[in-house]
Amino acid sequence: NGITELPHAIGTVANLWQDLFNNVKKLELPDSITEIPAYRPGAPDNDPPNQNPGADIGYFQDCTSLTNVILGKAVTKIANRAFNGCTKLVEIKVPETLETIGDEAFRDCTSLERFVDFPDSLTVIGQRAFQNCSELGIVKIPDGVTEIRDSCFNGCGSLSNLVIGAGVEFIGISAFQNCGNLLNKPGRLIAVEIPDSTYEIDASAFFGCTYLTNVTGGLSLEELQTFRQFG
Image 1 (cartoon, rainbow, N blue to C red):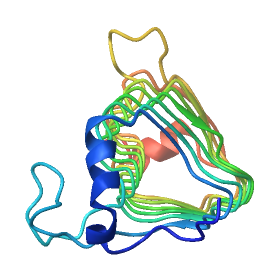
Image 2: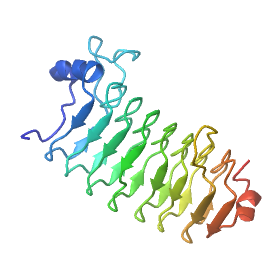
Image 3: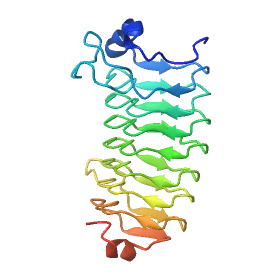
């Protein structure tokens, strides 16, 4: 619990990475950690499998043994690609202090079912942050978030419950493309409420949401179709 930051130099924690890739299923970080860094510098002898030596990669990227993560109570930022490609990650618990989720932070976490929860303190969700999280069923975006960025939840095929916070002003390109349409899942994304604060929805934001027929709030389904958000 005396650790105050995660080391940036992978060479100093080579044994940690070996354990993460091969053994560790549950990761619980101490309350003293305030940020999951953007990357760990690559090193030829310590890069994870299938990574180019020297490439900048997310701090826990491709830790395919991880199933559960609990972040400490002081974490304010999960940086870019932090958990990208953690294909067995089922659940992550974040603190009420979390403000930022970086680009591609959880991209391709194809087993992620539960993100408990988006706290009210959250203001930024990066591009492609949850792209291809095909098991994610519930997304409730807090009021402090003003933008749902490009492809943020693209490919979340199991999404059946979507709540967009009252502060959202902008929904980016393909933000919810191909959501809630997996035939082998009982849930379907059939309804969504667009808040009155939303003034712009970019192209293909809901493209491929086959079962989405009930849109209420700031923009109607007809208006969305007029602006070609489904095409």
